[in-house]
Length: 193
Length: 199
Image (cartoon, rainbow over all chains, first blue to last red; front, side):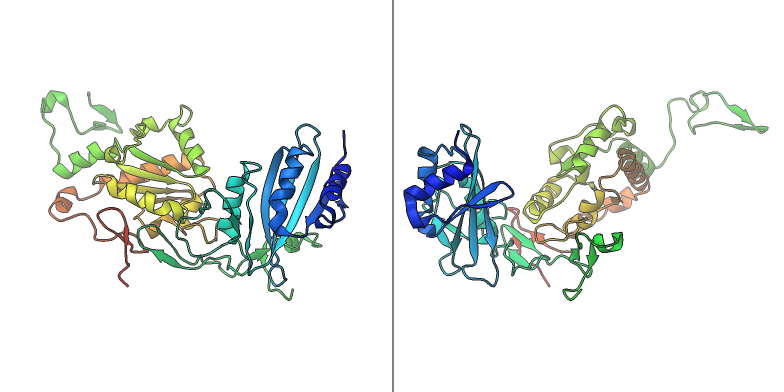
């Protein structure tokens, strides 16, 4: 049975500099794919040649203020060898588009729709790229860092509407590892604290 | 019913004595109609989140909402009297809730069950309506997250008391349907679409 590290090495042998050196953290292997345009090709190889027949999750990260802004994360697993490898690839805000992997794993269909709905990253070649949580026609991408937690008012006749939620001084922030319970409980905290 | 003697006075538990009054009951139209209504409030179970589980518990044998004549959970709004909004109302669901409320026939009442349905609860976010009273009128609010089944039964009893004192005959003379409901004041068109709000 190959280990995660060996499987990541095999991926690097096949694609060369496109795949970064495997990074190990707490027993988990992460590799970065340099060019997001080739992610579907890498995933197809990982599935057919390396036995990664299960896409556990596909998620997106907003590195607000940095460039490239988006990071798309693929959690790969194989039922045959039971190993797990994480693929990461970065997409610039201007591009905001990368190839779909829904032809590789069908489960990616809804994951990519969620990433599109919440973050506004488009997946080219996706069979049905519609919003999945918010309604069709909602004008914002609410998981972006620059979207306020309380929301923005919308009024779409025929479909839905939103109003800004009263936060009562919030958002409420916890301090992990605070010295007493008052510090650890969710409280209104200004950024300077 | 035979008269009971309590403290030297003769009393009857009920106002109706078949030996004296025969087959005739004297009452007012309001009291009679309200009595009919309040003892068979059929719920429209709008179970949207975890409060829906407590709502099911209320319907089951341990708490047994049928003691109050409300065991007939109607999944058709046409046959319901009271909508029990049990759970988090998201904006995506809000207009469906509103539309089902519109489809219920008069007279109709609403119980907002739990913190989310009453105020949005802990969900101060872009996705959650901050209280179902923004779109439909609420008669009874139930606190809790989720409320105990007894709390919902208490709300039902309070609603029965409210129904028992409604001036029906006076209401029948006027158009009871308000032109718009809720604090948000949204108006729906004939197809259930949202019309632009009059500000």
